[in-house]
Length: 496
Image 1 (cartoon, helix red, strand yellow):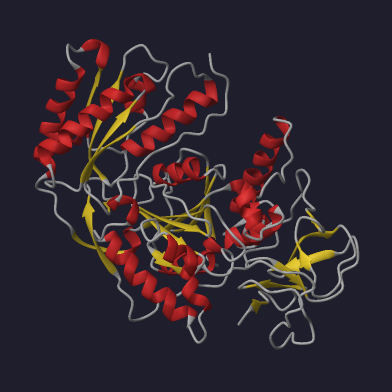
Image 2: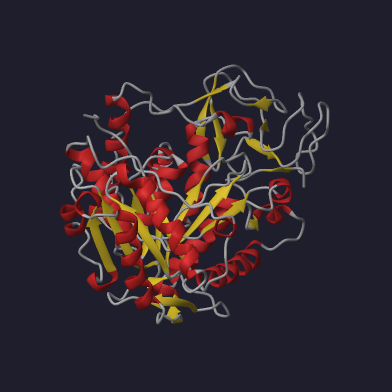
């Protein structure tokens, strides 16, 4: 299999491996040959497409031809342009999603940490969160010395630092506070040390007040300006917290207690054919088991948003999706930027041409479940099934937002590769086998295997689900093994 027609309506196929100029396409397209050399992941025209006519992939238009295109020709930025512009009016036509059932034979439980508030973590770590960037180094020193002191007694001790918390106002400050509050309440944190400075806009007292779901016995906090030695104070707090965490044990927990965040980064032309659909099948399995699935990257829904709108649980959720998409488009417009300024150079090298194409591939991660909830940046997912979370496409910002929304496991698909990791275990899934072979220190699972002849997609996804249950139960991911963990906060306001 050298090419793939994703949907019967498509007037393009995707090259699954490089095609030489003049090479005949395989059956059932053998009457065509590649008119130019076609890189893997790129598109080949199946029919003649006149200038101005739509190019169809995934069964939807991904843009229009900017020149006449002959069958067999390479389709990319030189002859295809987006159809996206500004905001769109939408109409609700009912929920078209089909019911999901959890298959027999798959694990229904994982071994997790049940917290006092009923939530379940996949790790038992001590997190150090700072209110403001001024105490970043102090937080990191406390974490470094605490790791030496306590070794492997708990699953980990990590400081998640950032440059914000001061010189911020209004919604911008609120974004920072809500994001950090979500991390403080995260069930993977068996305990949290919150370090402030004392004079910052993001006051320690207000940050703690924005974190109502925490077990106060597992929280310690102080302002560095108000203690004699902030490192000694931090280590003393860690001593108390680790003493409590030592008794925490994994217990059997149902799949309904999983919260899984879905993310793609460094996508290529195969991401929407292998890794993203694989993650989408996992989304459906988790939703069928009454777990929570969270999907973000709002700009990478542009051009594909109506797929989610057709699966809105009710008219209220439909309206929330409309507001989510149009508000984010307005964010671009207010900043005098086109809504279609995407894909990235790496995406284009990998075969993605327009934002519609990238979006239609990206939303495959959401599977086919009903959309039950839409939440804003910094909010936490509270309903089973699929939740859409407001957030930009940036890998670090959106993955941090997924974690703050409660995701205890992140599934990160990639065609180009990245070493990035985040507070929650981050499972990297490659869209192609060459990336998995080149970067085994980055990649946890190779979805390129789906392209092997005779490979059953359902069985493949079931095997991957079993692997994820192992990860949720403590199996370390590549980002954990390499200690690649960080956070990034969406900065969208003035700086004083």
